Length: 256
Image 1 (cartoon, rainbow, N blue to C red):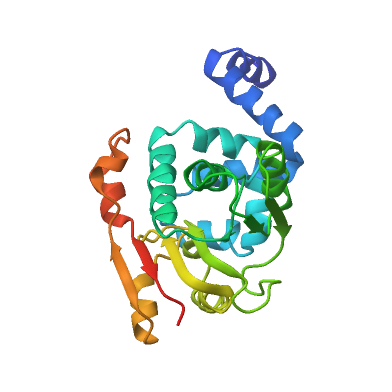
Image 2: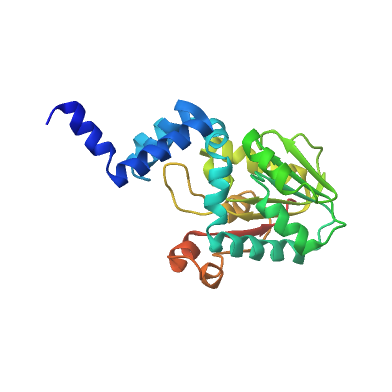
């Protein structure tokens, strides 16, 4: 069979048609850069140094490219993510904060859960460096009162000292290399009046550095009120509840 006919035969197979359609969808969403990004994510293993170098050398570009509707659908399709978000919101509400900042608010999932947990009267602010994520957050939270969304960098928070009663991160600091992670934590401490709350996993992959957040606070002489894994029961809908729990870390600390 001639090469051209062989290629046509391959394209005619159901699996090939499905892959071809996915490639076209990727191109429509983000052009050739997004097609390349998706291909490399599938091709290279999560612990590959090459994958980190190729895809994650510039985290802002990575999350601007990846953080669209497809990423939101992936997250929303995981019940354990919703359960974790609700659990964390209950912990935030237990602190009785008068104002809240989420650093790395993404598409607004955690802010939405926090609003339900603390009521309508507490001012909420979310900051993220990804324009695509913030656009989704603005759409998702369009009906939420007393909410401000800011495009900005967690290393240089555009707020005065002690601006918020409680400052929160959820799976955000772990995506940054050590020097940047240190600056982000220092900024969180600076703008918080009473509470610093974190959900940050401790494992390492191509786009995760994995940190012991509680140890960072203790090393600087700051009081850690509570720290430890998120309970396994929170991840009961996951394929790996024990693994998700063991690599998670909840940390509640005071900024001074």
